[in-house]
Image (cartoon, rainbow over all chains, first blue to last red; front, top):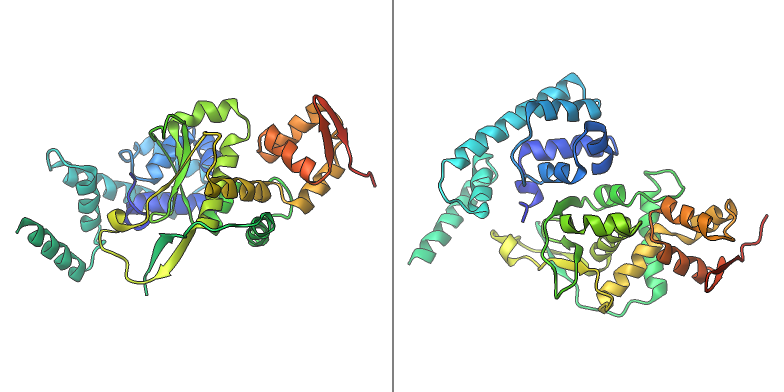
Length: 126
Length: 210
């Protein structure tokens, strides 16, 4: 199951927002970039590792992205790669754990939410 | 205040209600898109409902191929990777499935004010799963009807038919491909609107030409 919208990586959300702004469907962009539209949906839903730099450039070309937008795509994809590496350090991790860690690394929780989570985990242990 | 999402209890919905619900959504859609067919249901889903399209591997449900579904909590419109062959062999079925899932969000999911639970993926409403099974519970039937109204709105469909000679099957198939609906869905809709009469393999256009 894919993570909820707010928990998707910045890269996935940014790519989708660029596509939406151009009013392109997954098929439109997939065909223009030479990427299968179902694979593109998996990229936008963080269900596959971040695509290669070459694929990101093809997507950027197909989106007719500006220099600043290409830069942002590269920056967010690099950030996602770093997050993936951090997450990969953990052996035998479930998708839920990876999702949770990704959200923690991206600053997706407030301190009070983190505290409540810890309390809930502590309560479960007892 | 944050909102949660719930599945509405099952209600009777008249055909007129389903048509008017689809009409209201299309009026919003056509403020962003040109007032003409075909309706791009994927853009409608993404722009009006902020649904995220997600192709995934989904398991069969009670022996029937799962075509798609919606996850209300995550606002995902999910399509089954394993149904790609079915969608390719049955022209219009992919588009109709998307419209059907949008209809579920329109008709069967409600946002409720309240505090969002922290682990809401667990506590949120269950996903709605839709299959190719012929036996349709009321919710599925409602979503089917609403999908037909979304993809084939009466006024625009009548106008489109005025431009076409629908007295033979090839132009009927052309129109179904143009609208992105199956030939059977188109036949049902055109007969309802008394635009064609179908008797076996015979097809008669009932559209008065201007």
